[in-house]
Amino acid sequence: MSLYGAMMLGIDGLDANANALSIYSSNIANVNTIGYKDVSAQFSTILTQMFGGVDEAGVATTASQNNTQQGVLQQAGSATDLAISGGGFFAVSANEDGSGTPLYTRVGNFSENSDGYLQNGAGFYLQGWPIQSDGTVNTGNALSTLNLNGLSSPPSPTTLGSLVGNLDSDDAVYSGTYTSGDMMENGVTPSFSTTINVTDGKGGSQAVNVDMLNLGGGKWAFEVGYGGDLSKIGNPPPENGFLTGGFMQFNSDGSLQQITDAGGADLKQVGVTIPFSSGNSGLGDLSFNLNLGNSIIDGGTGLDGFTNYASNDVLTSSNIDGEAAGTVTGFSIDKNGIVTANFSNGQTKNVYQIPLATFANPNGLSASSGDAWTASLASGGAIINAPNTGAAGGIASGALEGSTVDLATEFTNLITSQRAYSASARIITTADTMLQTLEQLPSQ
Image (cartoon, rainbow, N blue to C red; front, side):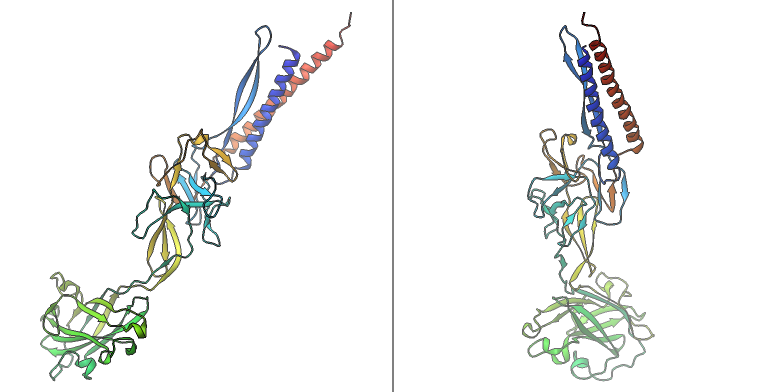
C-alpha cells in the first residue's frame, strides 16, 4: 500500500464517520418526533486492487431506516390523534383534493382544520373511504380526503310512543251515555288528561292530548287529539283536534286486560295519524303507534302500561321516539378505522373508514419531508386494506406513536464516530509525516 493510498483511506474514514455522525445527530434531533423511525449507519468496505495484487480496503457509509420497528404508543388528548399498532401506514396527500403523488406516514397527530379536513402536524391530508348511506364500505373505490364539515343528522319522526301511569279506580263514574269523541268534541269532562310531545317529519315538536274517562266496572274510554294549532291539520280540521279513541278494560287486580277501538275491535297498539295540511304547515301526515300497555302485545301481565289502582291519577313516564335534526358534537374512531360522527340529538353515523397501506418491503420506501414516504421499486406498490387485515395492524384512537430513537444508544454511537473520525485524521497526519521524511532524504 502506498503512502498516498493510506492518505486516501484516511479520507474515506473521515467521510464515512462524518456521515455517521450526521445520521446519529439526526436521530437525536428527532427523539420527540411523532412516528419517527431511527436511522442506522451501515458501514461497508470498498476494496481497490493495486499493482501487484494488493488490495486497499476503504470504507463508505449508507443510511438505513427501520420502518418495521414499532414505536411505543403514547396517550394523547384528541380522538383524532391516531397511532398504528402494526406494520401499516396512513395514506395521506399533500393536497386538499387528494391529488399528487400518494404519500404514506406513521405520523398520526391529525386535527380538523378550518375547512373540516383532517391534517397531521406535517400538513398532510388523511385519506379514507366514504361510508355509503346503507352503512357499507366500497373498498374498491378510490380514496378521498376526509372532510368532517357539513355533516348533519336528519330528523326522525315519531313512530312509537309508550305511556305508563295509573287511572284512579275511585274516580267518579260518568253517568251519561258515552260516545267516542265526547270528551274532545262534546265537552264531557275527562277523569284524567295528559299531553305528550311527538316529533314531526321536519323535527318539530307537536303536542298530542290524551284524555281518559271512567265508565265504571273497570272500563275506561280514551281519546287522542292534536293539541297544537288546528289550522295546521285537515281541511276542515277535526273538531277540537280529535283524532281517534277507544276503550281500556282492566282486571279486578288493576292490570290492563284489553284495548279496543271505538267499534270494539281488539287493539294491540293505538294507531294515531295527525293529518297535517301541507298548505298550512308544509308537513306530511304523521302516523305513529301509541302503547298504553306494552305487555298486551305479547300476552304479558298488563302491568307495564296503565294500571287501575285506588291511587291518584298519574302519568308515571312516557317514552316517545323521534329526534330533531342534529349537529355534530364530536367524533370517535375505532380500531378498524371507522369514523363515527356523534350528533346533538343522540344519533350516531359512520361516515368514513380509514385504511392502512402495507408494502412488501417497507424499508425500501423513499423518504419525503414531514416523515412521509413514497412507494419505490424497492418497496413495491402500496396494498390498501382495512385495518386489522394481514400485517397492517389496528388503529388506536387518542394515542400517538413515539419515536423509536434510544438516546443512550445514539450518544454512544456519537462518541464512537468521533473517536473513529479522529483516528482517521491520524492516518492522514501519519502518512503526511512519512512523506515529509521521504522528501528530506538526500538526493545522492
